Image (cartoon, rainbow, N blue to C red; front, side):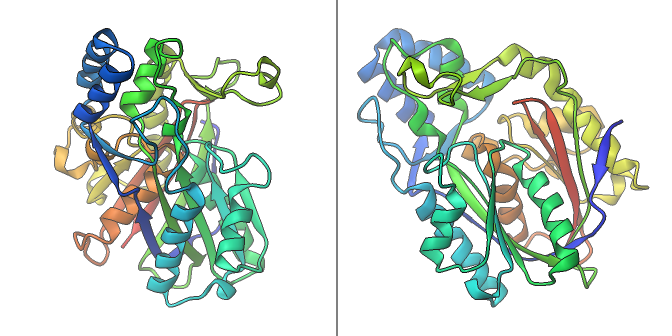
Length: 349
C-alpha cells in the first residue's frame, strides 16, 4: 500500500464553516428544470435524486436563469469562514505564518483564491493554493505538517467550492452526467486554524495520503484549461459515474487500512467522517464495517457533495456541535474521484 504519513502532528486551534444563505431543496431544483428545460429533464432529475439520497444543499447561483454569477463569491465565503475561525482561536490575520487554500472552482484561475482572501483579510504572510478536489484538505495538512517544523506560528487552511455556477440549465448542455452534478453537488466553505502540536487535545494525527490513479481515466474533471479553451465553450465538469463507482469503494477501504495500520481498532473511534459523496453514506459504510449508522457522519443528505470543502465543513459542524467529549476520536476518510486519491487523519477532541 503506497501511502505517505505526515511526520508531524498538529493541533486544531479553531474551525468554522460558512454556507451560502440560499437553502435549496430537490423540489426547487426540479421546478427550475421544468421551467427552463421541460418535464423530461425534470423526470430524469427525480430518478437521479432518488439514487443519490441527497435532499438539500446550499447554492450560490440564481436558479431563475440558465447561467448565473456567484452570490456570495468564494472569496466572500472564505473571508467569513476564516474571520470566524480566527476570532474563535483568539488570533488576528497578522498571527498567521501561512495561508493554504484548496478548491477546484476558483474565483479566478490566476491569481488564486488564496491571494484574494489575503487581500480581503489584510494578510501579509505568504500563501499557497492547491487545485485539488475532495482530498485537498489532506494534502494541505501534509504541507502544514512540514511547514510547522520550521515555523511554529499558526497556519490557516481554507477549502471552498462554488460549483453550481458551472451548470447551464438548458437542454443543449444537459446530459446524464451533468444531471448527476446538478442533483449531487452543493456550495460551501470552511476554514481551519492549525499549529504545531503541543497538547494531546484537539489533535490532528496520523495524517495520510495515497493514490491509485495510475493509468486510470479520471472519474471527474473540469475542462477550461489549455487543453480545451480553444473550443470557446463554457468550462464544465465531466462526471464518469461508472469509473467513480468502480474505484470509490476501494479508496475508502485503503483509507481505513491506512489508519488501522497505525495500531487503532474500529472501536477506538466515536465517529467516522467519510467524504460526503451521497445521502446514503452512513448506512453504506456502517453496513460495510458492521457498526451503528449513527457513528458515521452523513451531512451529504442536507448539504450535497461539497467537493474540496466537504471534510472541513463536516468536521466544523461536528467539532462545534458540542457532541464530542475530551478524548473522543474521529476517523476521517477522504476520497476523490478525479484521479483517485485518498487521504485523511485522526482527530482527537
